[in-house]
Image (cartoon, helix red, strand yellow):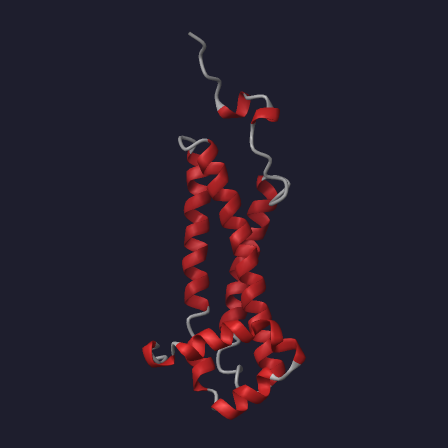
Length: 153
């Protein structure tokens, strides 16, 4: 009977290629560390969404950019752990990425209640801005769920 090699000793041709996400674990770590700063910047956006169409656009861009970075971090960590579930390094990477996801959700928790607090006419005028057009469906979904959404308190 043939003995299985540890994952790190396998021929790379038969392993997943993670390079579309991160070139290596160090790049993953750098991105994960950057997210901590991104989360702090997201919390600074609280209270600014109703100022202007530009402020709403800026906030939505940062929220979605950070979310995309987080998705890459989580996907990399999850795939690494899935390739070798017994490797404690990969277990820790996935755990840290899940923790980052919780921090992200906490940092953006203000978003929906704050959008809902913007006067309807004002928000509608904001949404006429060309830059906000890609977010129309997102904002419409928030408005559609208004009666089921708790306020900030």
